[in-house]
Length: 112
Length: 114
Image (cartoon, rainbow over all chains, first blue to last red):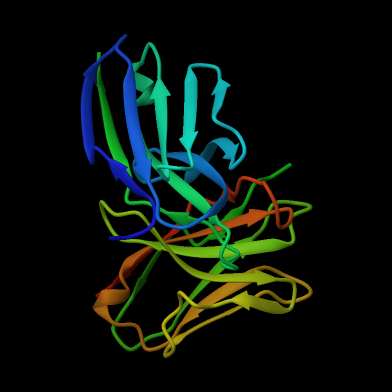
C-alpha cells in the first residue's frame, strides 16, 4: 500500500456534527500536511504539523500526529455544508525525497 | 499577489499530438512541483524543479514526458505523442523553498486525449 493512506475513503455526516479523518504513512517524516480539494479545483493547504509536534489547532480544525504509530488525524468540528470536499494528507518524507507524497483522500459530504 | 497560474485550464488533444502545460509559480517561489490526478484518486508526484534545474523526476515516465523551468518564463510540462491514458488533471504547485512550507496549488489543467 502507498504512503499516506486516508481512512475512511468516504464520509457522510449532518451539518453541525464533527468529522474525523485518519491518515497512515510508512516512512519517517519531517512534517505532515492536510489539504482540501473542492470538486474540479486545485488543492488548498489547511495545516502543517511538524514531526516533533503532537497536536495543532486552526479554527475549527484540529490535527494530531502520532509518529510512533505513523498516523495523523484531522478533526473538523461543527461541520458546515461548505466543508464538503476531498481531504488529503501529504507527508514530507525524511528519506531524501524532496516533494510531498499525497494519499488517496477522504471524500467528505456534509448534509445540510 | 496572484497565486499559481496554470494554463490552459482545459486541453483537448488527439492521440499522437503534443500537449504543453504551463505553470507560473507564486511570486517569490522558486520551487515548482508537477502532480497528476486521475478521477477519484490522489495526486501522483511527477517532477520537482527549481530554476533551470530538475531536482527530482522520479515520478515522471521515462518516455514522452519532459519538464523544464527556464530562467525566464513559466515551467512547462510537455507530453509528446499523447495517448488516451494521459488523460488526467495535471496540477502544478510552488513553494518558497525546502522546509516546513505548504504548497500553493494552481487550478490545474485537464487534459483530454481523444
